[in-house]
Length: 484
Length: 105
Image 1 (cartoon, one colour):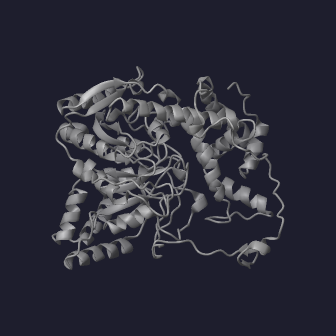
Image 2 (cartoon, each protein chain N blue to C red):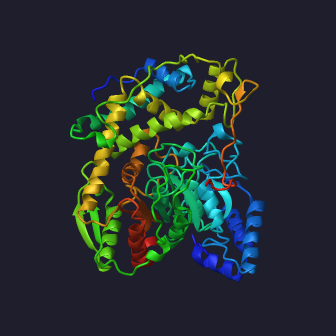
Image 3 (tube, each protein chain N blue to C red):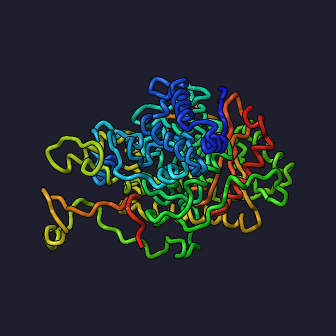
């Protein structure tokens, strides 16, 4: 698939200089969406769009540029936003029937910040219902298809946003991460995806799934696109008390052609004997590239890695069962007709939620219920502490970043995984970063049978600059080899 | 962990707690799925977490739990007594802060 067009930074420069009108870029994004067919009969990547508002916002950027004002680092750059992030003029349904028709009365801080940076929000993207899934097959609005092979999934849960970037509609998109929902679709679609440190980005207006794990993440066509996108949304927000008051580096300025002095950890638990030999080869080539850039590659161990999936699939459903209690037919979205209040709750929820969300609410309620709380939830919290400690110990030995495969497979065919736990294992290399709260990024490192393979870079808390520095250097070193 | 498997009665109990209405024919399937998933969680029981201290936030004191059940605690006073305002049986509260509001001092 050929993807035309300049980078997000170049687009913003053209719009600010007045050499290209922002309205034309927005028109081109809509034209590309029509060309690749992002509707239900095609990729099914965009659920809602607002052409009129987008063109109006683009015209304002053009006006600012004409008046000699700085319209921001994403001036006139079209972006799409996952459907669990609140916007004012388009619905926010989280890919669920229970929120059908719901339009938020307030806007997510990340959306406000994108607009302040000059970005133009052109649409809301398809996702696994309430972000529960690894393939974007669990949407109430039907599955999203991978632009590189429409018989395959784009990954998930932020599959719609990843598909829009991979299809060349936008250079930057927002997703959300709880266990790998940005990095895994980035890997499956051959683009860049970054999950920032827990607390790096405001979650005001992000519909909660598992509050101790959730973060807004950014997709980019390139490392630079993702760096500019994250830079625009990162930082303390008075509306989110869990957002950290930590300085935000200029991520796009971390470009480096050398990694001299950088120590890269290769955690052996992420390279088991069962790992696809071709994925291992792509990772080995990335390690060779890192060595040629001057970095030292060191074997390390994160001994509790194999416990991440059981831990994650206790904590995340437990928190989800609590967070999703608010969807009861009273406060949001649809309401079933019933004779009594309790029947109305039950009917609304059982008809409004799809099978995977229902399964996770039941699982979460079960592990929190009397008699099982200590054995499951308390134990999982303890093991989570051990997993986080593994990372801390390795970083304390002088390792700057860790490099692993992003996912154990490439994009699988739609409908291929019917067993819930088999699907959960798609997150095996990504859920650890969410459990530990550290930042992580996926970038393309080659292909297997024409399908993209993602390489994952993980860094200590708030060391996003280290992530981007390593990612910029690897992207430059691999060049076209990252896409073949 | 060595826990007993999830029974159909427990699925019905948990569904009631979660305010989910399940069709009778769904219950055996859901019980089997939950058992399939929970079997993978058994590996956690073999992990020694005894050395973890309270600083991890999962100390030995445990979390106070309420009884599983639906009975609501009766209010000592009627809602009208402490609500800022009422209309049609609903509490009226101030609107949420938004980005359009001026920054607080």
